[in-house]
Image 1 (tube, rainbow, N blue to C red):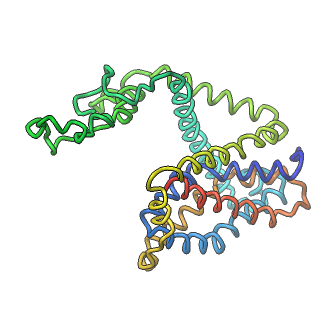
Image 2 (image 1 turned 180 degrees about the horizontal axis):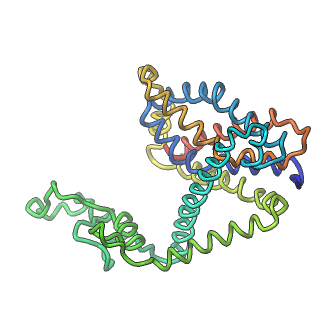
Image 3 (image 1 turned 90 degrees about the vertical axis):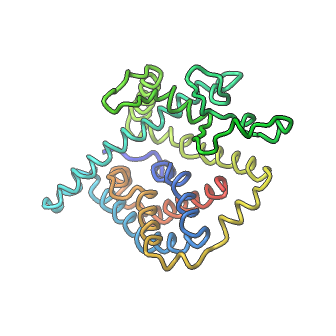
Length: 310
């Protein structure tokens, strides 16, 4: 079995494996719902007592046995079903995340136009309920009496929402109508799978080189968004809401449950990937040190992403 080119490749691969949508999307939302800064207390408690030990255990298994999530359970065949479960979970997660990458590719290609199609309501797929940013600013039309024209009970939708639902996905109103295959999305999905294939074509020898970009570029994007965000009006208000703790929330058991689920989801424990990546380490590698570095980096990224989002 081969080995990583150097230890940095393993650490970057593990960081890239752990850091993802859970850090950027889910963690800020859970902070918002569970008391702002107060949520970080149970979050870090769960990291120390649940996340890091489980993370270290999986790295130890893979590194000691030099086997993937299936072969490692030969030490105790009664648990081989756990390995098959990990393989199934990883398969479904791979399919799911490739769809997300497909959507990212689609918007990347479509955004290469002078006027973005999801910024206005005059497209063929828009409905009368579509309200653009300028259309919704009634104060700019103070000379008009629009009281009789506005039905406040009618649902309004943004052009970006209608672009996503009515054009990109082309959702039908009937559950029995599956609709047609969206060729642009199919093409982007194919591109995403080709990219994955090229990254893994030579195993850790190729993926270990790719992670120098894939594991560091998200931090560049987050930093750009952070700098842009703090220059906007009201940025300090959002950051203060993010940091101000509502300590009464800690007494709610659901908050602790959300903290635990976020730790496990964010670190990627029990998915089989950690065991497989660690299996390419040298036998005497300090995986305890690596588990602490990777886990803390992952959680620090979540906190940093919270500043960007808020």
